[in-house]
Length: 273
Image (cartoon, rainbow, N blue to C red; front, side):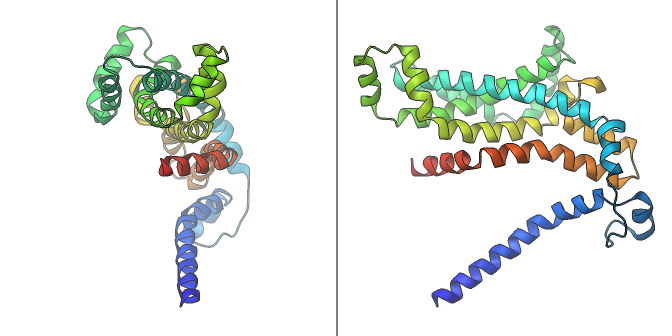
């Protein structure tokens, strides 16, 4: 009976994996087909050609290189600033008796409960008033501002459950507040930071809504809005669009694979807590 259940479980997982991998493999295969092959036999037919020129077209002619650079210029500072500020806020709210700290935490979290659609016009107008509209700094500020509350809430839960004796021992040894934060709390919350880092990188890198809200010039657009422009430029060249999609997915896949061990351990630790 146990063998039957195990076999059924493995069979189900294999089918679910194939169901998820099917569209991904289809896009990868289509990105290596020629335009004539797709036009003659359709996008769902078996490939009868192989070419990598589609990636060159997407990379240079479609502006994927510039878009990827813009995405990295936005994503990396946004992730570092968000996690750095959230870690400091979580440390203060979880380890010190600050008046109204629960109210502060709830207010920071409540900002994430608002639908972003109702804030599009106010955010765009505010970026114009501050002179940041159509700059990467505006997009960085938006990503940091709207992610800070959630990151603080998550890190607060991890830091709050750490034994207080650790901080007391560090204080007895002569460590100051900054040393306790950098040398004690941050290393102990590394799994949570890695998990949040991987998630925030994916969310910010793939963001479309805020990018088209505070940016206007094509030269400033990150990779997700650039895919829309690519679809308009190569409206019937599905192979080039597929190649651009594969290129855009590479950074997020690489980050997840790099931090996979920390990501899984961070989720497991959060489940236990």
